[in-house]
Amino acid sequence: MSVPPRPGFFLTFEGGEGAGKSTQIRYLAAQLEASGEKVVLTREPGGAPGAEAIRALLTTGASDRWDPAAEVLLFYAARAEHLARTIRPALARGAIVLCDRFSDSTRAYQGAAQGVDPGFIEFLDQAIVADTQPDLTILLDIAPEAGLARATARGALERFEQAGLAFHQRLRAAYLALAAANPERIAVIDAAGAEGAIAGAISQIVAKRLAARTP
Ligand code: TMP
Image 1 (cartoon, protein in one colour):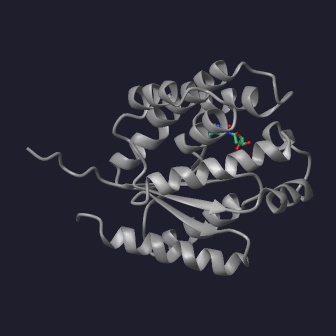
Image 2 (tube, protein in one colour):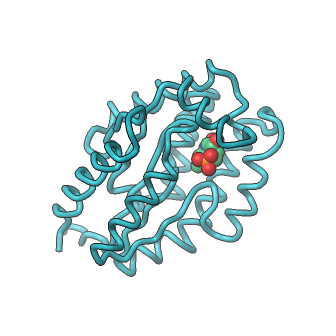
Image 3 (tube, helix red, strand yellow):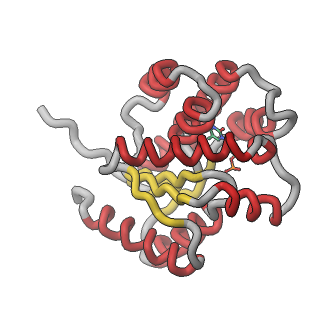
């Protein structure tokens, strides 16, 4: 027996620091709302009260503040709260959930860039995210030099932004490898160009996927 499709649509945005995710996600949310869709805009770590409290532990302080395995557990603790209180209820109402970062961030930042066993991350992902996997992921790809320059220009550097250039190069390679391994789910967008052109490219991909949804 086939599983009925779930209502709603789960779209995640990924990328390194300064790739322009927040700007692009806001553009897309406004556009989808204008076309009459129910939209829930959220972010990780965070998106629910307990998860926002965990965010403060994860994004501030020294870059070696946490043991990498402890850090992964904190990200998945926040994700469990976020899924239970925000994402799953919104999908059940038929909303389009736009989420700034999700499990691919853990795979790239903690897995590939910090050396946490990918098997450990996938074990947690199966237990916590289970079948609430993203329908589509937009990966905003930018050279780390350009992304870090943008992140620096917007203000004080947060915890992961302080890590060196080599870390951010590993991160970019990890994201591109994830996209190559999941071509159906992850769309790579060149984030070096003009904001309007990037927004146009994202909107085209999203429109195509939404049109293909089972009614
Ligand atoms: P933001 O700067 O995009 O708001 O994300 C917060 C930071 O948390 C960013 O530096 C990336 C990092 N992060 C991880 O390392 N692993 C994760 O699973 C998530 C969701 C974020």
